[in-house]
Image (cartoon, rainbow, N blue to C red; front, side, top):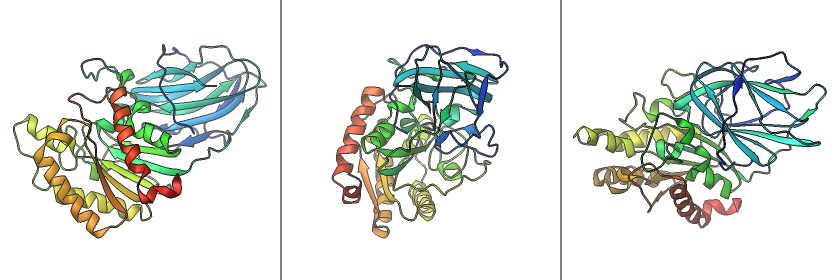
Length: 353
């Protein structure tokens, strides 16, 4: 579905589950899902990754979203007929969220967009309750031109995108993937988007105890998670990793890992085996380490040189703009403008323009 922009407003309130009026379970084929989700339980799939979307067309003056088994913090942009509300589901909550505005007659489009990252929390989507007798339909298929997939760290997840002067991690309401360069780039090219990015993650080391190589192809951002279904294949796969491999050891007055180049190459080659037809774009930049660290830049360029030498469907792009804090919304717009301008003149993109 069309990528959503954030229009923050007050979150709706979760209330205890009540008897259904006209309950449509998540397993109903009228729902449209996008993103890497856990469909092990079709009655209540787990919404895991940022940018995942659920859509339904319906009629009636009201609707209620049902959720189950929430962990951590989960915030969504819930949009109906171009009106947006930020709605949160707290850890452990099993209940309902009611749309706070009356709806007129006719057919409406509901789109639910996960704005917070997988590492912050996940939640099961159980379905939608409509008024008795109200009808629902599968939304018309989006006319996407291509598929894009992003892998990255907190820059790509939208961490702190709506924060003030300081980064904060206690309230994830201000973390918003909808405003990221990744989501803006997908919107620019009318691309169906998936994003498996995790704050703090690195190639060799980082701020969390899992590396990109251990989770890039899994349902959850954990090394013990089941492998994800790889049926969905991107046309363009973009990787923006490495910042934490410099930032984390530097915070402890330690050097970058000496095996960064070889491990970066191994990760990209593993992704290539799983995505044989995709154009790979290796990205670098956006924050201090990935822009200003000489050791990181040298190690990354060494990996890029070897990968591009052996794979003609691999290229690279370096952002000019960078920030000390995590990029805010305006800075993501600058990063997206840089990347979009470069992509538009690349030969591999011409068939999608």
